[in-house]
Image (cartoon, rainbow, N blue to C red; front, side):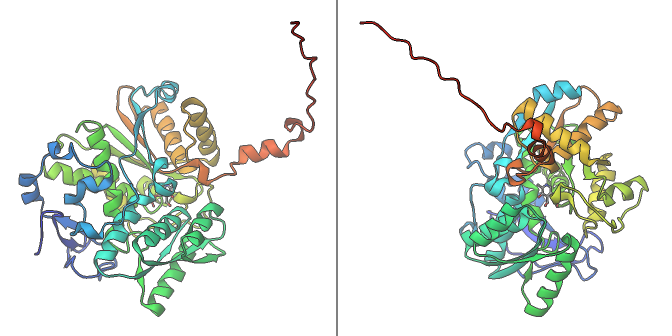
Length: 419
Ligand SMILES: Cc1ncc(COP(=O)(O)O)c(C=O)c1O
């Protein structure tokens, strides 16, 4: 094992069959088909590192470089990602009867979503490993963000994206110089095209959980929540779940912090939130299964969580079972109403995925699963600005009674000041 003190990365491991892989070589998934997870020398790290050392570090996610996979800082591709605000939500919290309600607000990230975390770390590590070109299937945000980071890092990107994805994310890909393939279909169809392209062209596959490092970037959401709460652990964390990489990452971060003794006591109960139109993890959890089934005829306006099946499903379900969490789905109507409520009450124009997670907190509080005194963190994974046409707006524009067709300004005679 070669290691310097910048990163304590030691190897990659399959969480299913426990096979070990070198992290100094390019890896994708395990022979058994499972995602691979990065492992660190936590024993030595716990002796060498302590929370006080974070005090003077830059306010971005690279402040946790010991627990990130990039071994040499010159390979880092950074757009200032990380250390997003953890905001108290007093009005919404009162409305939901959760006084200690917080929002981890990822809308302030480069390109407006938490995807910047995975892209920054994934692309930096790809650069370190000498990769020049990659392909990614995306529901919009990931493709946009990976294209932008690729531009900054000097890599070539190809993105395969459903044509219905938010148009602005296409513009970002094109502006960044990516090869963009728009397809008729959903993310699973995009995934099939990516697999074919990888086979034919031999390029690096950066599909979620098919390379080991995107999750390492996403886990920094977990580090930041804990640091921003002064190393106290919240009771519940809710996460809008598509591939589940974010939730698995947060769970991994919490376990690593536990192992190096930075936190103690029970971990937060992790909640995977999905839409009723696409809820494979919820169905599996309700049946107490360890893997999910492909969700047929899926649909939701919350594009980021439109994922009918993920190869990391067993890890998402494990995170929920191990922490005593739940998986819950909300309706499209609940998502839109919550998006409006959060915006009106707290001034944050959040994305529908984030709104789904707030809607789930509301349901879980009203059925008593969340107790009034508990500290609850909801992940808003992106900005509503990336989804410019929310249906209630359209309804207003299409309703002639609500549209002003003419407006007459009454002229007032100017008052004359006598000299
Ligand atoms: C805004 C937003 N929220 C949530 C998700 C789902 O995250 P994950 O795939 O990590 O479960 C996505 C994924 O595209 C997204 O773009």
